[in-house]
Structures are given as structure tokens and as C-alpha cells.
Length: 98
Length: 487
Image (cartoon, rainbow over all chains, first blue to last red):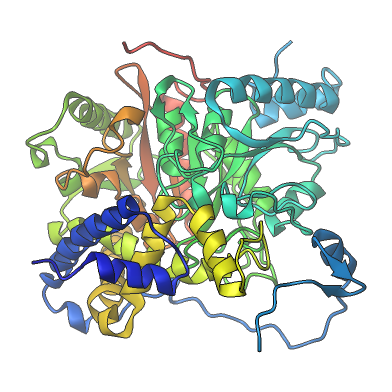
């Protein structure tokens, strides 16, 4: 029996604030099954657990942090012009706290 | 007169001599954009008010081009081909666009893509399917579908693309043109919608290797807004092109390229691989040494899942800001949670939803080791394998996909586990950030197919030169799509 169920898929969709149709749910389940089989192939690779995970395309890259200097921002008017509703320098958004 | 089938260099010379004006080129390009939109649905937006630019010594000045719709363009609709951003107009330009603006390049349209770059068919954009200009019953591949379609159809000499799995290089193959993604970080990603940041590359689709080099020369450079960029000032791609590849060494992977791997191969795959092996002979005749190498099949078989797990995980995180609160049409609901859910449920296509759920699942603490960490481990093993090859060889050569463009009516067919490693192998170029270019490699059943050259990081000149020599020895440079009837 599959370890994935319709309820599991719906619970993940809910966490992501996404609603799924029955068909979409079934498609996710199918893809999960495929990926799970493929992951089994990965686990067949000898000593896979000893390999350092690669997180970035150029993981020998030396990043340089730029200095933390305050720069003048001149885009406030552009941002305001781009919003649907604003009052002076404040953009109206739905209430998200208390 | 028609000009848009010409190369960048040819157009520049004509502009400099006064044989044509920037305004005339734009007019022709816009007319062709509208015609192609009717036939193939390649564009989200056509910029009918595009203005001529002063022609300077820069090769791109005054010449029209197309922009994939995930590049932020100031004051111009930029949707990522998603309903969640269907009305979004950025107030700034992506760095790459800013650079092209500075040299006087003229954007004339925004091209359709798979929603947020997620998808390889060109069928999931919110404005509909992009049809292949060679055969409208087939896809262009994706996600840079509209860009490939328009360049192949002769709307302009080049268009911008992005490539997270093979999204420049596969559409280029299916449309019979050239697609190049340079080494990761050569072009700034600032202002381009992120999909899977550790895999995302910018690049270009054009009708010749030289045109690709010219455009990337203009787009590249270190950018304080993208800390993954590096200084490529000493690399001049177009000036470094030469036809002397004598003594170069390339290899192909037996487990991908040998027909004996595919006992159920259809006619198109057989012809595609036969054609590829003829191209290897052509390489040899150019003085390039070609070797067959062997790679652990288990690694190759695990490659596609590795890609799905990593990109789904990164995408689910990157796109958590698509709530309808900050950008896009606001959803309905009595509170912000319901509003976000309404926005995301209605806005995202089924494919995107699937990817997000898979991404969220593989990142959960209890699942992370089995899925996400192991995928990243396979990524390293594949990259290390390719880097070992690059110690001995200048590049890896491979056929692109498993034949010509796929039929739209057959997209729902289950993936063939036997051929998936070949179909999706260009993703290894993204795992390692390798420079990688697809060029046209003739025809199978009258439809174009491609061949890919991939080399080591920062070795773009070498990769382009091998492609340049091969292109020169074949007859497909500068080709424009001719609609064929395959019954």
C-alpha cells in the first residue's frame, strides 16, 4: 500500500495555501509514486550517505559580501505609482495582524 | 524588403551604411510578431510603440529583439506567463535588460513561457500553448518556448531566455536554432523571476553561435545586486571565435548515446541517434578527437528525479511571496489567509501546484534526508563525474532530447523510464553551472533536431569554439523555420 494518500496531499496543499481539485490531487499522488521509485534508485548508489550534498552550481565560489553602506533610494514614487490604492506614502493592504 | 532573417553583424553593417534604418527594422519585426502570434501564439505582449534607437558602433544598437516574460521590464507587463501576475508591471529593469538598453538594443515583444519557467513543453503559460513554427501539431519545448518560436520564425535575430533544466537548449533544438547558457553567474539574475536559484541561468536564443556570443558579451558582467556573479571582463566571447579546433578532444556518454540502450526505440529516436553518430564523424573530420566514455547508469537514471526534487524544493520557497497581497490580482476572502488561498488556487496551473506540494514534502524535516539531501548528493556525484571528464576532454557532446519536437497530442504519455535519462540529461549542465550550447543538427522526419556541447565552468570560449566549428561544417546556420506537413 502506498505511503501517500489523498489526505496527505491535501494537508500539504493546505499548508501551502493552495486548493486542489480531485484531478489535481490524483496527479500529485501519481507523481509522488514515480519520484519515490526514483529515490529508491538513488538509495541504491553505494555509500550515497557519505557524499556531501551540493547546494549550489558553483560550490567552490568565493562570495564577497559588499560593504554595508546605506544608499539613497529614489524608487518610492515609482512603487506608489505601481500600487492599486495608496494614501500619501502608505499602500493599502489587507489586515494581517490582530 | 525583408531583413529580420539576417544575422546581427549583417544588420549592423546595413544600419551603419544607411541601407536600412532602425525604425524600418522595428516595423518589420512588429509586423512579423503579429503574424506569428496568429499562427503560433508566441507572445504575451507585442510592444507596438517600440522606438528606434541611435545606431552606434555597438553591434546590437538599433536592432530588435525579444524578451522572455520572466525578465523584469520597467513599465512593461511582465507576467512570468502566470495568472498570478497577469497584470504585474515592474518599476525596474532586470540588470540584463538594463545592459541591453545601454547599448541601444530594441525590445519589441515579451515571449510566452511555461508558467514561471516550470515545465518543458511551452504549454502551461496563461495565454495558451506555443505552437512549433515547423509543425503546428508539435510543441516548441520550454520553458523559453515563445523566444525559440520567434527566433526560428525570423521575427528578429535573437531573443532572451532562461534555463533551469534545459529551457533554452531544448527549445532551440526543437525549433532548429542555437541556444546558449553561459557559465552560472556570468550574467546577473537580478530582476529575473527566480525559479530554482541554484540552477537558474540566463542566456540567449539566436540563429548562429556568433550571434549568441555577441548578445552574451553585452549581457554579462559582475553585478552588485547578484552576489553569484563573477568578473568576466577578460572574456570576450565573440572576439574569441575561431575555426581551428584541430587537436581538441571531446567525448560522448555511451549509456546515453548508444542505440543498444533503447530496445524499444521508435523510428525517430533511431534516426536521431544515427544522425548524432554522423555528426561525431564530422567532428573527427575537423581534427577533433572523439572518444566514447562510460558513466554509471545508476547515476544517469537518478538524474531526472534529482532535478525534480531540487527544483521543486527551491521553487516552493522562492514563490511563497506570490500571495496576491504584494503582487498580482488580490484574491477574494474575509481574511488574508482566505484571500491568499483564493489567489493561489485560481492563479497557479496544475503543474505548478504539483511542484510546490512535492517541494514542500521533500523539505519537511522527516523527509529531507531521503529526498532533498540525497538529491543534492546525486547532484554532486554527477557534477564530479562530469568534472573528471573535463580534466581529459574539452567538452561532452550529446544529442538533445530523444528526437524532434514532440506532438502536442502525445504529451500526456507516461515518461518512458528507458529514455528519460537521455531526454533530460542537459540538466547536468545546470547542476554544475556548466557552459552549454545547442546547435541545429539537421533533420529527422523533416523536423529539426539538435546537438549539444557542454564544457567546464568558465570555459565558455572553448565550448563556443567547438560549436562554431561544427556549425561552420554544417548547413543549418541562420535557418528560418519552414512549415512542413508530416501528415
